[in-house]
Image (cartoon, rainbow, N blue to C red):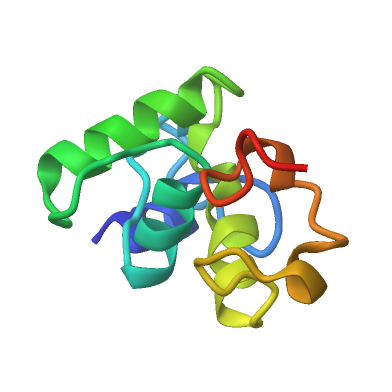
Length: 111
């Protein structure tokens, strides 16, 4: 449902932006397994259960980056995991070019 709302409300491509009466700031992050793992890896949540509290926590964390459109990051987070650019563990070769490495829980405190 959250992903459908994102498509209908957000104005930027690839979204349709047909429902202009709802601001993107009101959206909640659609959380699937890929978003869940990436959000945990970059410290947006520590929760282990994919539930409503996790959705609220991830959305709140992303609102610190952009309060007007916190769910704009969903594709970037999801794609990173789906494409194999993130293995949800420390992997020197795969992680080397990653711009999220400074925020990643798998790399914190390590050189």
